[in-house]
Amino acid sequence: MIKSELHEKYSYLFEEELLDEIEKVGVFKHVPEGEQLMDIGETIFYMPLLLSGAIKIMREDTDGEDLILYFIETGDTCAMTLSCCMGNKKSEIRAIAETDTELIMIPVKKMADWMGKYKSWQNFILQSYQDRLKELLEAIDTIAFLKMDERLLKYLRDKAMVNHDDTIKVTHQNIADDLHTSRVVVSRLLKSLENQSKIKLHRNSITIVDM
DNA sequence: ACATTAAGTGATT
DNA sequence: AATCACTTAATGT
Image (cartoon, rainbow, N blue to C red):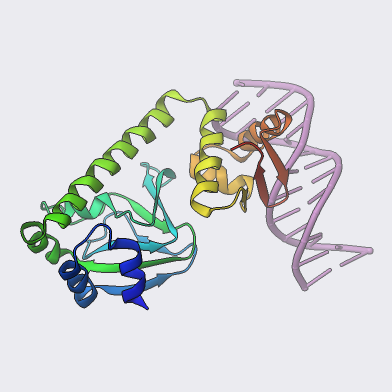
């Protein structure tokens, strides 16, 4: 079961021997929606390879308030673990399962081995690093340059994307927490987005009209 | 029927 | 955009 899923999702990236090694040392894990995978300051021992689902990556401000950075999906890995093999052992971010997620945990010490051994692994790591960096820059742009209503719309679209569903199950308060603003502001902006026919509001859920 | 939680709104800073 | 204060609507017990 693990084997078939692993091959299905990663055979286009990795050669057979590497897939076999991953299978041998990797630990399969199912993470239910909402569960925290990693917290700020925690030591990283495993690098996660996503098989299905999505994970929300959050940063924390000085008062302990959260702010969403981005989502990672199937085929992605965590950039934090990548910088880990360069000496950083503690996580700078918090990771929470956005949906039910299946992943394979690979011991961090294997990463360095495989870097020299498998070209495909090296490519994957470098590519992931690049992807994450790009997403981080995008997150900065979003926070710095977009107005709240644009941020909100982007958030909703991203969320719909990773959930593969244009109806999102959230409360206004949940959104406010993720975007680091207040519930009242979210309610008002959502209302105006609804008036622009971009979304439809229901209790505990929001439907995106035009993707 | 009542309590609780989510959402809507005016006014103020 | 944040906060307060209050209202209204939906849902659970």
